[in-house]
Image (cartoon, rainbow, N blue to C red; front, side, top):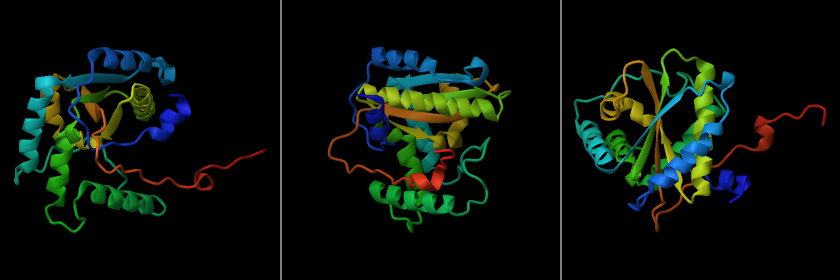
Length: 222
């Protein structure tokens, strides 16, 4: 698989099979991903790979919290989106959300929608592996951008191995449960989780649209 094919085929998959992912494959991907760029070569990411019974226990504990009517989740340590989204960003967000809810079989006007979505998320959509990416609290916006480039590198390498993934900022809602499970101390802040596995057969594939190149790119001097 070449780079263009890996980029084109990468999707946030929300239905994984229970087929295990070998440790050798994960080590190969994460070793190669160390070549991801970072300003000043700080390599600011801290990654915990959780699978097997520890992941099953984490899912059980997070699911119990998601189903508890009196548990609003942990206070977010950074905003997931800007407080005021305007066009065209709000339009793209709304269109993608509508597609996502439809693919998951959850009606947008379902009053129980938040709990249903949270439950699906904390099950990692059935993925047998979840990577949790943390950053040191002393890091700034530049290092958060570095972590994004690192995770994109990981996701493309996973495609080269025939694997899929789904980045999930949702895990930050249960960050205390995650930190207890992986042993992360207070100097680290959870950026996101990344569910990893083989795509489940027979499930409709969601592929959200993308804006036209002319909406985002301006060529100068061409």
